[in-house]
Image (cartoon, rainbow, N blue to C red; front, top):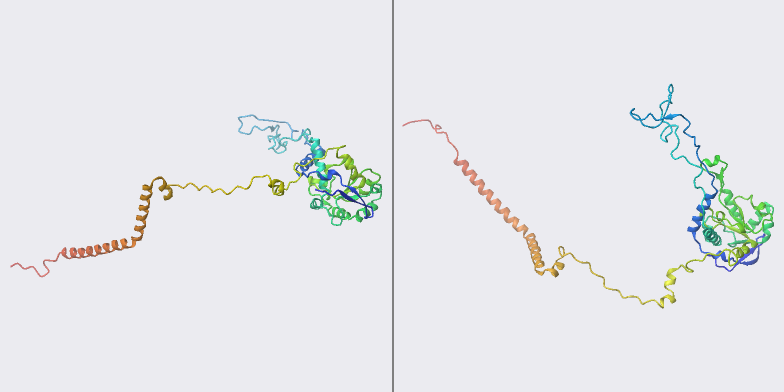
Length: 382
């Protein structure tokens, strides 16, 4: 947040003409959540009611045919001799019917907002406008601006010519932001271009004055430039879109009036819950470290409980005999795996010898079972 006790006051020619005290409200805590909430609800309070006609989709004589005719019970147009006869009507699913839940003008359009919340949001937006980083992050072109917040002499309130206002902004480096806003003008997307809001444009500087002695007429025609009296600060102008960091051009009288508007004689200035939110710096400070307990020594971590069904060591603590039995079984399995080749070789040799003996027996049986022809040498009976 801005913490400078003094800010520079520049003349209309851009020269430094003096200094003034920074208002206390410029050190208010930044609460983008409150600003966003209040802006969202305030932005709803300028809406106009809209609704469809109460007779839309109902300007036809129709009644349901009832049950028993194998058709839906939707109201149907009566009569005959035309294609419209017998067609469904009234329902939102029917051609030419009314919409679902027709909109009404007595919808809850506007929102009530707590006064304290609105004041908190305005104070946060004012504080954010005094931080160059937030102003630049919001998109304003302030590279040539000598100081933020930018305070001009009170004589700016008597400016009546736009040409003079343009020269004043150029002298303090604020006209670049006006040109940026002017170059951003384009045709609106959507149907709004046909409804008297054809163009959209980015926001430029916000000129805040104490009394209107012609300053409204001088600045109002510059693209993107808005004006506001310091007695009527508006969050919709200080934080457009709910984003803090509007580039504000103050008159000296307006800036000094903030001390009477906010403070003991006016609205209360919000206070932060923590004056210093740097927790690491707080914890490591000498004041905290001198009273805290010394660091604890590392405690041996507990080992995870082992499953005795999987771990032999855990099983041995419960039943040494069962653990020994499991070790023997594991060793026997290892032995079988190591002697597997020898056992297989022995079995295969026995199978080979058995096959050879079996082949010899088959050959003998085949030879012995041959039946010779008894008349091969003739048949002689002696």
